[in-house]
Length: 162
Image (cartoon, rainbow, N blue to C red; front, side, top):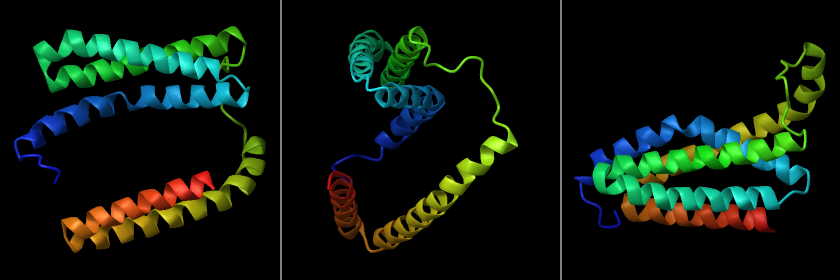
């Protein structure tokens, strides 16, 4: 698909494995960004993105020549780490980063479950439905699967934007 050869599969797997190791860092960055945006602070996430881009370019320059795809993946994970740390640091300066971490009590869980329970079930049903539709489309061949992916993407963009 898209002209890729079978020789790219092992390289893609290596890249994905390294990036998967960095997924906790990505979660911290995403949550930190949401904290900042909830406080109407768009500057911090923007600066974090700029820092990540600069570190990623520098990391790619330094690591790709010697380590290839693995270097690109490491550069991306490290840039995400630096960006996440920057955003968390800025939140900490404004005392918006939770310290110390507290485990919620059962009394905290009740109101959350009352709201999140139905939302969770709806999202779970949507995920199952779209997974089944995607699995069905892929059994029809490459072109129908690609068309399905395009239409699902248009649907999600339209649903979020409007």
